[in-house]
Image (cartoon, rainbow, N blue to C red; front, side, top):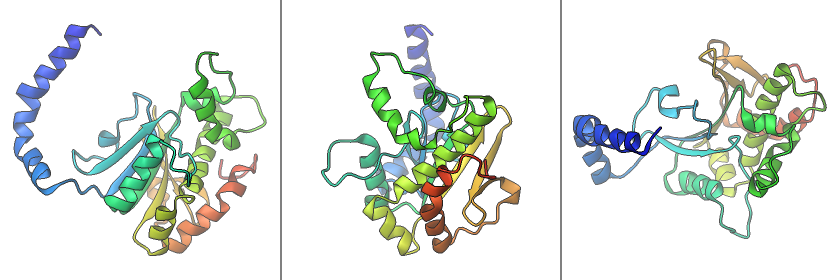
Length: 232
């Protein structure tokens, strides 16, 4: 893509798309943003949250990073974009749902089995948040699919280290969701806390009570450490 192409895309936005939705944006500016869902997804260009969830501007608060990772909460308050976004979404915007969405063919999960380039020091440190999702096997397609799912559960567990997340879940005002998006199939598998399995949308039990979510969190680390768990 050339620089001219980028400018042309801006022109199409300003003269074509935005005028059709101008009133909606004016209302969102006037009334503020009130998203119901924090979407934590991978930076992969093939994952498009608004398309995946059939929604538009104002409905999602989005955090994207390499591998859809959630660093543990740190009481020192060191600068961290993902942690700050989680705090803002839960404590200020008061979203009701947090979705951790991983996907198939994830380069970040493959990178757990490969040494990043020597110059990518931040990448090496960042991927450490997913190390516990690795399996002690060769990186086959089936193994990587299992690692992708294990990583989603691991990040759900990490979310529970945030005091504001834990408090909101305990009060029944916040629910966690783990999704595994199969890119080439157009299917999203949903983590069912009742069975601790990733299930097709149509088979999901909708057992998303606070107790079930808390049970999913408490089991998450043990779930990730079981290389032959039937759920993966």
